[in-house]
Length: 334
Ligand code: FES
Ligand SMILES: [Fe+2]
Image (cartoon, rainbow, N blue to C red):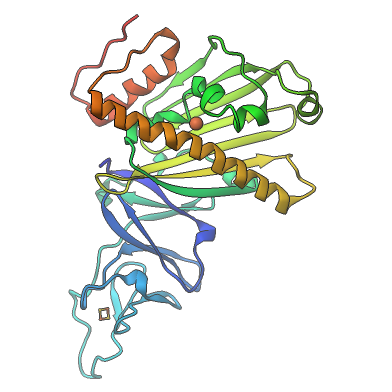
């Protein structure tokens, strides 16, 4: 489990003023709720009275109320009300549960998993489109390898093949040839860009533009966000993937799709269309991600990377540097 990191626990519109949300991130059961005044709390999903999940309860003004006997906790995890407590007794000081540090940013709830004193607010990746563009999102639970999931969106060469019926058909064809990447590596991220040949149908050209090349950007922010960003003359489409280890065997993957100047005249249709596309894209990825883990486990074989896998190679270096900082780096075979 990768701790001392921010995790995007949910998109803000998943929360309402009544029902708490439960999430399991890196093996930790968390309940997330929004109070009447709009504050967002994230607590361990456990009432300390008789140990049931707080997510079975509901939000009461500024607190979350346990559904079993009505104990109430504030956003700091402190029990502030016990309905059955006699007037002459005080709430025991031990009646409190673990609280998680929360930041609400980019219309999402970020939860810090790890040591509170190591909280670093600068580590939330830049996701400005979340504040500006319409979006759809969907969650999936995979029997996959976290590292493979992390690098998937980011691997430019898979798009033309894995997504030949979804992204390729929608965003124009990628020529099957070596691409020139412009890659920038920093302490916690890799970003870059490349140009794709605009080889789409006449109908698509009319809509997306006749420019010969389509500009595509990509990014990875350790440990849990990948980005694909396709730019047309005035249209723009961004896909974020957020992923994490739920427990030892399961990876959660949330795909968030955002767009600008696409199907603007019909917003409900645009959402329906993008959600349909997004589900198709993600199901294509899942098939390969689960298969990749299975075949690697069954055969025990290592990957054979070649020169054109340069972005993947940068990813592997960063992943290794962050997860195994004391081991020497792998060398590329040419
Ligand atoms: S178990 Fe939560 S109030 Fe009793
Ligand atoms: Fe993909």
